[in-house]
Image (tube, rainbow, N blue to C red; front, side):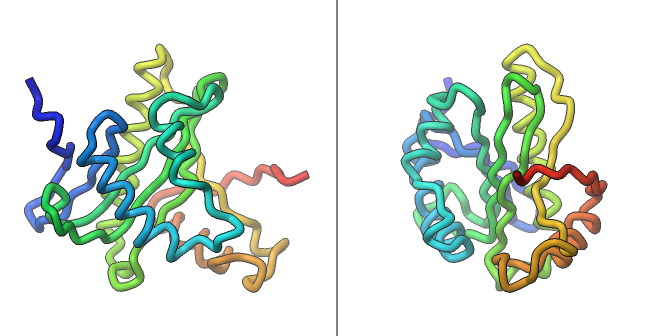
Length: 182
């Protein structure tokens, strides 16, 4: 039987690991709380933040439309003093059998480490695929939302849209233009 207080880190030789949050594990939820406070709150303006309570509800299956997956990147993630480097938040949409990587956030001191971000995104995407399989599906796509730099100024966005698109392209994403704003 697995230890209910142990996180589910997937670590590399460098000591970096990605932890997929387990809503049934108190230690995992504690790590989520730390990442939410130190990474998410620092990156997302207060008027655009989702409450942590909503995340926990969605992680626990309380959202009828989508399941949430949160991947946390860092070192010593099983310890009392983890070093948090980034987090990725994704939603699996049951009816569409598709996913959205809603947030990919890096602590600025680690933001130049593309291989870390790629590992975090790959493991979070794999977790979204697992959620799809557990729902009897085979995920049809994983999307990343980014504003069209031709339609929004950098002052209207928390990160310049052109820079965000470049970063995702560098990570292997393909650009698909979908006009989703009414």
